[in-house]
Every structure is written in C-alpha cells, then in structure tokens.
Amino acid sequence: MSGYSDGFGGAWKLIFTLDPDLYEIIFLSLQVTITAVIIASIIGLPMGAWLAVNRFMFRRYVIAVLNALMGLPPVVVGLFVYMALSRAGPLGGFGLLFSPAAMIIAQVIIITPLIASISHQTIRDLWAEYHDLLISMNATRTQRIRALLWDGRRALLTATLAGFGRAIGEVGAIMIVGGNIEHATRVLTTAIALETGKGNFAFAMGLGLVLIVIAVIINLAIHIVGKTERASTW
Amino acid sequence: MVSILPLVLTDATAHMRGKKLVGPVSLTLSPKGFTMVIGPNGAGKTTLLRLMHGLQRCTKGQVEWAVPAAQARDRQGFVFQSPIMMRRNVADSLAYPLRLRGMSKAEAQEKVAKCAGNFGLSDLLENVAPLLSGGEKQKLSLARALITEPEILFLDEPCANLDGRATREIEHILQQVQARGTRLVMSTHDMGQARRLAQDVIFLMQGKVHEHAAAESFFSAPTTAEAKAFINGDIVE
Image (cartoon, rainbow over the protein chains, first blue to last red):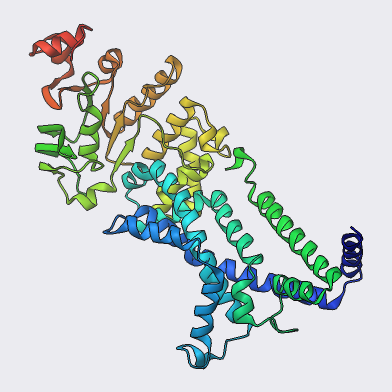
C-alpha cells in the first residue's frame, strides 16, 4: 500500500510543480491524439454516412469488413506502418519513422474504422427516418449526407469520443512507429510503460492520473459543448 | 414558366418484391383542383400518392408530367401522414428546402418569417421541431412543403392523428392554398373531410381505381356498388 501512496504523492507533486518533462509528454500526447482524431473524423464520418445512404454491390460485405477492422490489433498496425515508413518501405523517402507524424498515421489507421462504423450505425437510423423527406425534397446525394451529418452531429460526437478514447490510450502501435524517444515521440502511454519498467512508479502514476483526468475532462467537455444530455436541444 | 401539369398515369403499376401494391392505374390530374383519394385500409392510397410523386418506383406503365420528371420534382411537395421532423428548430426546418434550392440565408430567413406568420408558427420558430405537438408538427410539415411554392402538393392523410381543432386549422390552410392555385391531391379516411374539401374523388380498392368522378356526382350517385357501400359507411374489403 505504501507503494501506492508514495506513487500518488509523487504524482501530485509532479503535476502541481508543473514538471516540464511531464507537461511536454502531456502536450505531445494531446497533439498527436487530437490531430489523429480530427483526420480520422474527416475520413470516417462522411464514410459512415456514405455507406448508410448508398446502395451498391457487396455493400454488406464492405460494412462487415469495416466492423471487423474496428478490432485491428494496434501492434500489427504499428508493424505495417513501420514497414511502410522504414527506409526500405514505399514511404521511406519521407523520413517520417520515429516522428509524431508516424504516430498520427498509425492512430488514424486504428481509429478511422471505429469512427466510420459507429457513425454508419447512427446515420443509418437517421437515414431511415429522413429517407422519404429528403428524396421528396429532391436533395442531391451530397446534400443528403450533409443533412444527416449535421442533424446527427450530437450522436456522432460519440463516435469521435470513442476514437479519442482508443487513440489516447493506445500504446502498441505508437511505441513501434514512434520509438518512445525522449523529447521527441514520448507520449503518456509509452512513458508509463517505460517508467513502470524502470520502477519509477511516482512518475508512471503521475502520467496515469493525467491520462485518466484528460480522458474524463475531454468527454465531459464534449458532452457539455454538444449538449448531448439535453434532449430539448437535439 | 411552363406548368408541370397535367399529370398522366397510364397503366401505372407499383410492385414490391414481386407483389403488386397498386395498379394498373390510368388517370389524368388536371392543372387545377382538389382531388381526394379515398378507399378502405390497404386499398393503395398512400402508394398511389407516392407513385405520383416519385417516391414509389413505377414498375409497369408510365407516370408522365408535362415536363421532364427531373424538372417536375422541384415543383412538387409531399406531406406525410406521420410528420417527419428534422432535428432542428422550426426556423431551420422551414429554411431547409429553400437552402437546398440555393437561396441565400438572408432571403431564406425573410421567407421563413413570412411563411411562419401565415401558418401561425411565428411564436415557435426557436422551438425544436421533434418536440412540437402533433398539430404543430403537421402545420410545420405543411408549411415546409409549401414554402417553396410547389405547383402540386400531395398530402397523405395529414389529419389522421389530429383532433378536431387541429384538423379544422389544417383544412382552412388547405382551402386557402387551393384558392391561391396550388393543385392538391390528398388521401383521407374521413368521409366528412372528403365531402368538405374534394372537388373530385378517386375511389381506390385493392390497388385499382374503382371510380374517378367529380365530388358532387360521386357522393350523390356513385356508379359502383363498392363506392356506394363505402360512402354509406358499410364495411368494404
């Protein structure tokens, strides 16, 4: 038990004394994750809406594959991204390996299917409700997708939050493609893994506390901003 | 502007998964008037309206407007039995069809204010549409369909779930709309409503038009036994 209390004590000290190493890691974690969530949302939300609105051959199989991709093992994604970005790989010339950009790429690959799949389910239900109205109003395909994304925006925040939750807590892929380099690619999760291995529990717990607090604050903030708990606002 | 009417149906038939829903139907809707579509449950009233409007695919025969179908679509409106409310406030719901047609925000707002006034919705503009009462929803639905000034408006039992007062309000609006020259085609279960509003009546049974006649002659001297029984309030299947 004293290990825990020492850890907690040390953690709070690091947080309240504004430890520069801790805050550098927090800032990079947020930078990488938020960028990945934005990119994945730009891809995943319209993709989910497009799949809900359009009928084409093998649509069911595409949706089934998308759902299956939600469970992509991050380590395998990390391996593929590593191979693609390494010198001998097809994208090696860009020199992105062991950089935040590589971590963002890996996170985007991991969370895009998640965001697309959840948004597909949301938009599919809304489309069933709006179908006749939008067809009757002669809305084009793009206008339909826009209306569905806009009117379903609060429910779609859940998809984005799910993506954020998965990305901020991800460790396997970004460890491989980022390399956990101090002052360069070290983020909360990789730092926790490293500090735990070193037996530096105070720092690891400080990082862990921050990780939990960030996840809770961002979820709460989005709920408040999006007014998702107030039905009268939709 | 060239009128999209008359609308001519020639042996128009609708199937769903191999099962015939309605047809073959042959009839012409002239540019003016108020047509009431009546018939027992499952007669195909809703399907016929959807077929005319293009929401239901015509699998056999033809549904022809005076202009190409793509042009005709923008000049029609449809009011559904269960109002489909977008998850927006009343003002944005009314503005939506105008914005779809490329109208600027300022112009749309001006038109929305005017339209809301005409429909008694001015006090509800900031209210969330899905949370309105049944009568308010149907009024909004009607206003939204009419804000683009369609040449023809299809109404699928718009008063089916409304009380007497709300029904009277809707009927009053419809009479005004018709007087301004909008062609109305409406289905109803309510014989009293059909008598009050109709200029001509289409009597449907088992997906086929049994009778299409001027309202006065239909109600006073129906030519088929089924129509006569239906008018008398007998059970017709």
